Length: 113
Length: 116
Image (cartoon, rainbow over all chains, first blue to last red; front, side):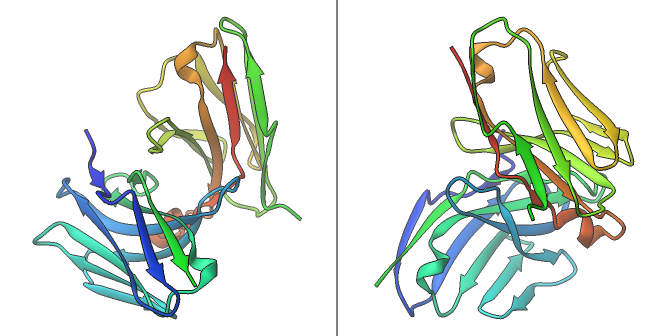
């Protein structure tokens, strides 16, 4: 039962353009959402998060949008850079278990020159 | 200086064997975790320890036993290894004082376990 879904396994974007990575969730008990980035042969690294009381959180080139009614969140990267090529994991956490994170299957982002 | 380290990086072993994966963090964090990344690339939490106390224990076979000798270490011992245990296992840690800090987890590089 996939509670966090990333339906696009891969995405290719030209350098300098906007990258948009999408994520859907099914559990209405989730109230905290995160994005992690992973390079090959390394562990995931935390990128950005958003609480359910907000609909947008911005950190430099990265912005996460949350649409609670649609149970959808997205990560925007502007402008995309070659170093952004990695696998991006969407994740969510329920209020009842703050340290428990449910991850999606990841989207591989490739930035082409 | 590696923040979260795991040993070994690769582990190849036969079915039925017992093996351990070690994890150490030098960040002074209170909470440590073990995750399993399966063949479909999902990262699933297995265990979480806070100050050496087990706080999350997902539906994991009891062949898997975590051991936390101190706050900086969380080792994973696996008995009677099976083919389905083949996966990449990640250790992680977080400060876990505020909700946000719980989620800013620092991951180790992973241990690729192959059971033949």
